[in-house]
Amino acid sequence: MKVLVTGDSGQLGYDVCKELKKRKHIVVGTDRSEMDITDKKAVSARLRQINPDIVVHCAAWTEVDDAEYACRYKRVRSINSEGTRYIAESCREFDIKMMYISTDYVFDGSGTKPWHPDCREFGPLNVYGQTKLEGEMAVAQIVPKYFIVRTAWLFGKNGQNFVRTMLRAGEACHALSVVNDQIGTPTYTVDLARLLVDMAETEKYGYYHATNEGEYVSRYDFAAEIFRQMVQRGYQEYDSKHLIMKQITSANYIHSKAIRPHNSRMDKSKLDKNGFMKLPGWKDAITRYLGELGL
Image (cartoon, rainbow, N blue to C red; front, side, top):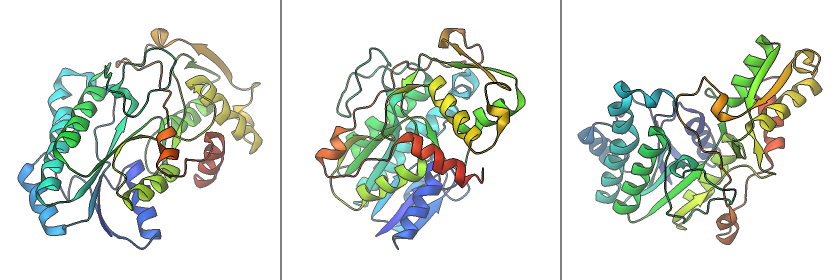
């Protein structure tokens, strides 16, 4: 199978390429310098040239707070919405399967019930979520053979993420405030990449949700587990004697410009129904990730 992976230098794209190569698939990874997805003609020419069996579209504007600035809205939309549409149109033209990586941010985060992948009660709270939803709709409307996979709270080796942020903050500060009213489960890109390649090797198209397994937790709980494991590894600067953790609400977190959903719980039962192996537990994923970082 020949696979084109957009955003191959990003967290998820990097691990998707690694997983594909491990399984001996032909992989063509692209970043912005190799294929500008906001250029319709460039996208069409590149897909015609490569002629892949499937495009795994990982490229996106993911800086959620920066997307809220009016001066950046046009750029964010050109990448997440219009760029995705251009890829979808070329996939239809050349009869190529498409996999689009989306987010729980397409929902409004209300209630406590896990969001089902086939739910259409959308209500994005920020520009990032809105433009990713527009990308979803373009793929579903245009491409006959598509996978739309929503995920949340990604962390991986090749990029910035919550785990890295907490490690830096915990090392530099004696007190740290973390929100306790955003609930979900983290996702390790190594594990998600395995699932995405499993899917790409099938024709079980549709919408899916995928995060690591385990109990639903707050961002505060997520951070506490990171620090607990770091102490177990001998990094005493993260223990309760050196680092005080405080729980705060999203409303009191002044560093966030974008509104984030409170409920990021995701129903992943559709994976079982279609015969896909779910991701391992998120605590185990943190353990493996810290090892990957050499900690």
